[in-house]
Each structure stands twice: as C-alpha cells, then as structure tokens.
Length: 583
Image (cartoon, rainbow, N blue to C red; front, top):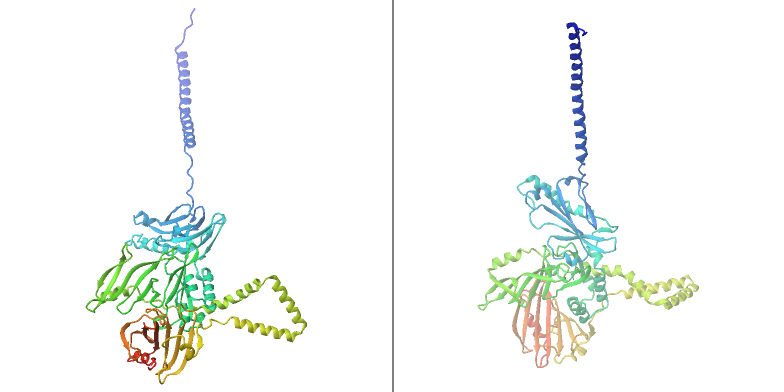
C-alpha cells in the first residue's frame, strides 16, 4: 500500500534544495575574482620576462681617446660638445653650433709620424711630440678652423664656442699616451733645442777664418767674407742670432744677421728652418739683396741695381720645405721720358717672370705699407755661443789626443809635482795663458805693407793726396787673381779707403761697400783721364759715397770710398783725382 506524502513534507524538501543551490552559487561567484587575479598575475609575469629592464645612461667623464692618446674635456663644456675619433685624430665640435648648421668645429688634436703629411695644411701648428709605446715619434699638432663655425647672432652660443676655442691649447697639451708612451709639450719647437749645431758651425767659420769658397759650400751668406775683406776682425761680436717662428707652424726659425743700427738694424743674412725635424738652410742675403722680416712675419727681400732699378718682394717660408715662396713684388723703374714708374707684381708666369701692374705713387706706397714695419731684432752675439762651446771643445781636444798623449801628460804632471808646489803653480799659469791665446778671434786678412811694396803690385798706383795724414798700406793675397792693395788715410776730417787690383775684370767690385745705392752717375776723372762712376747711399745715421774707375790699358780696377754722418755738398771725385800720380 502506497504511503501518502503530506504537503508539509514536500515543502521541507523544496526548502532544502533551494538552500543547497544558493550555497553552490555563492562558492562559484567567490572563486571567479580569485581566478581572474591569478591569471592577470601570470600574464604580468610573462610580460616582465619579455621586456628587459632599462639600463641607466653612461656618465660623460669628458675623456676622448683613440689608439695613441687621450684628451680630457673640462667639466664646464661637458654636455655641450660632440667628438669624432680616428687612429691618429680627435676632432671636437660645439654641439649647439653644429645642430644649428653652422659647422661647430672647435679644434682637432692630431698625431703625425711624418711632418710632411701635415706641413701645408691650413690652421695647424705643432704643440709637442709624442713617443708611442712602440718607440715611434709623432708630431702632435693642434688644428683650428679657418672660418666662422658658430652662429654669431646667438650670443650664448657664441660665448660657449669662444671659451671652448680659447681652452683648446690647454686641453691638447694635457694629452696622455694610451699605449704606454709619453708626451712632451713644446718638444721639437724651440730654437735653443734645434739649432745648436748650426750656431757652432758659425763659431768655427769665424774663428778658423773661412774663405769665400768655404762659406759658399756651406750655403752661408757671402757677407761674412765681405766683412773680413772690409777689415772686420771680430765677427763673433758683430754677427748675432735670434729665434722667431716666421711661418706660423709653431716651430721657431733661426735668423742670423749683423748687429747694427739705423737702416741695417734687423738685416738678416741667413735663415734656417726645420725640415723633417732637421735644421735646413732656407735663404741668404747680402749687401744689394738684403733680407728683412716684417712685424707680420713676412720675409722681405730688398734689391737694388741702381736708382733706375730697385724694389723688393715679399715671400713666405714654406712649412717643412725650406723654400721662400714669393707672393707680391714692388719696384721702381725709370720710364723712357725719365719719369718714375711704380709697379706691383702679383704672380709669376711659366717663364718665372712677374706679371707687373703700374700704379700711382700713392697707391704703390699704400700697398707696400700693408706689410708693416721691419722687425729690428736685437741679435744675441755669437761670442756668447763661443763662450758656451769652449769647455766642450777643450774636452773634445783632450780626448782626441789619445791614450798615449794622456799617459805622457800624467807623467809630466807627476814630474812637476815632484818639483814642488811653486813650480806646478807656474806651469799652470803658463797653460792658462796659452789657452787664452788660442781663444783670440779672427786674424786680419790684410797684411801690413809699405807704399813701395804695394806699388810694385799695381802698374799705376795711388799717391797720397797733399795734406792727407795717417796713411796705411796693406795687401790681401787670398783673393781671386792678383793681390788686392789697400790704402787708408785721413783727409778733411774723414777716413778714406782706396783700393786697386791689377788683372781685374772691368765690372769687378773691389770696394767692399755693400750698400743699396740711392744714385749712381757717370763722370770723368781728371788726371786719370778715365771714365768713372760715383754712387751715393744716404741712411738715417750716415751717408756713404763711392767712386770706381777702370784702366782698360793696364787692366786695373780702382775704388775710393768714404762714410760720414753728413756728406752733403761733398764731391768724392776731387779726392779720387788727387790720388793720381803727376806725370
């Protein structure tokens, strides 16, 4: 029999089911957020594994380097520059100027094993030498731009650039070798380091009384020999030297010239420069082809072939070449109508001739003045070099005597010691005196003579003018051809020098007066009955006058010269005529 299910029992069962379903729903809803959070965490972890963490930017310490050296940029410029490097260079730019398309190039530091590789590059100067770790020697040079590299309308940029530019030399000279080598700022640039052997050669030449051929063989100016002919006996105190960088490459040149005053002060007889780190002779000047250096370090060569043909040209000394390259020339000529023509030359054609342009006198003088005044150097006498060299020369002479001579000297010294202290002191005194005699300067190339002896050397010789005093005759044998005869005398409160030489050429210059003559005129000499020339040169402190004539029948050349503070109104022809012997 089936049991009956009451309404109450059914309702109870329904309630139980509802409660159970509610509990299940609640558990499902609570689990969903937890699952979502776990999934998000897993996804974030995966993303974190895929994207690496950002590294911090490197700190700019200002150190720039290549394979040879490094430089350090000061803190004040860090952040405002860019740099490029190669095996031998470091180039630095102003960042703001570069980004503004103004170039921005500030400076470069470069190393060159061969000086010829950078010699002609513009804007480069040597600042020192680097010896690499492998022993190779490099010139270190500093380069700068040759045009504007910043925005001159931007004051802030302009100041940064200029400060950076001014600091460039100090930055470059703080250079450090990166391969175990060493750097020396200023090495291979100073004259006292470079030309000591050259100066020693000049001391030797003057003390050994070199002849004209020896000077020519060594490419030294003929003026030194000419000065000895003129009676100069102390060239060590008459000739001096100075160091000057005249081609703006950072390396000093050696200039040798006469210690003088007036127009001759600063005259240069020889120029030496450095070629591949060795001294090289660049140029020589002489009386009628004088060299000067202007305040702008341009070389000027003055020349004169008389008042009708004189001028000058300006040249620069080529870096690491030892050559003077002419840039511009100026000259004065006498035109057919006897007026003066003022000419300027601005180029040389394929035939080596100047291309001349005629100017007004005013324009000519203006262009000439653009080169500035001459440097009037205060030369250091070579006598000072001789004094410094003397101890070394004495040591070398002693070493050259050899071991045998040294042993003999020791034996003599021992014998002297045995003779007592007094004898040894006397011997030392004699040695000192002998040493002093050996250091005496040039001997006079002229040999004293008498009028009778001298007159035998020339067919028609001089006679002393009436009223002249203090006549002195001398002869120089070591000239080309026949001996040169000289007579000096005092006359009219002036000292005259008369010379004569038999067998001379008609155009022989025996006077030894190396002046740039302001005027030369043809004349006739009474008594001699010969044509003559009279030349005059007027300087700031003295005037020189020269008379020359030639006897074609006897093939004899004559000259008479005088210098004085004032020769205005003086006629040297009258004195020359008085030198002629009466029939």
